[in-house]
Length: 422
Image (cartoon, rainbow, N blue to C red; front, side):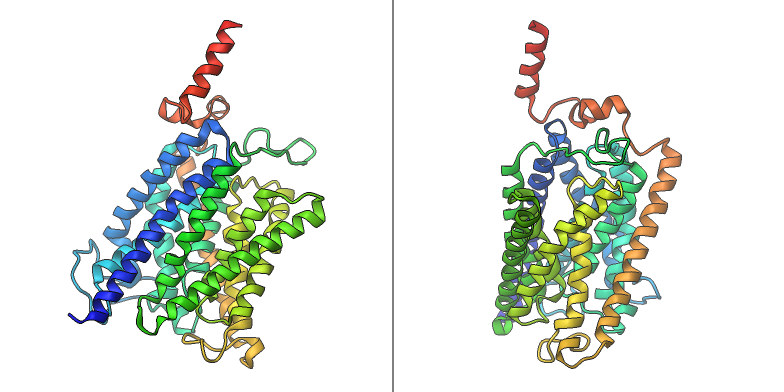
């Protein structure tokens, strides 16, 4: 066993740890962006669904993505992965498995953001199993597992399509079927702000995600040879910074105030957008990609709100709209030197060919993720008598109605005592 094999294994294991720790960022982001009465529920269901997704990925997900004897949709081996070494790997196969498992866990976490503050816990359970078995692995196989989009040269280095767009389209299906939260929209169609209970939590969540993204993107090099992971990390950080700055400035110009949640969403949008292209574009292009993503997320949030789509943590805009832009961006900016997959982009003499492949990948992957998620949830809704908690339970909050205890017990007990004594 040579030193390079060991170093690659250590590097990718570190990347897996960083990606898994991103779940802590999602807990803080989602809890901070929603109301106090649902904070414990959000934290608990994130841990629970990651655990469940891990089991499903071990049983079938990994095999569907990377298994041999593949058909048009999926691979057909390596189910119930035993930890055995696989052929053609330059690192430990169990380490590679854990790294890929972490990505699957992030995808389902993004998808479940569309359920926030109104879905039954049982729906999270059912959808996590089905998404982790028949939605995410199929798209991942098409692009990363040697499937038909990979054969066309689809560029998606670390998952703007595979992880982020797939999760966002599942979230869109959920938001449509669950319908808006109580009080979000007025009878005339105008929207009310339902403010998150802690912007500090939200900001800390974004910072954790930002740091974790170095495992997400730079870790996807799967190697320490030639130090290319440093270039990927550089592009990742530049895009995140550009997205934050662009979102803050556009909110300041349009609203007259620099909106903190918009700025935070801009940073995440920059990270999502650069995820596809971080290994294929020059540094200046990463700044442009991040700037466009920051502006795009600002207008995307308003687009969905005008259509009465209630997206509490902005999964559709941050992961969906920015994921689409990030995937398409390689069709413009991929350089001849860096395009180890597919062909150079439009601005580097590649014509429209790569852009067309990127557009096809977005359209087919997004449509598949949405359609299967929508059908799955629609069937579950019919069989379970609904996906949503009752109106009384939603007003009460999911901490109490679903779990029987508050995430902030001292606060609510004090308020209850004050009410009883008055």
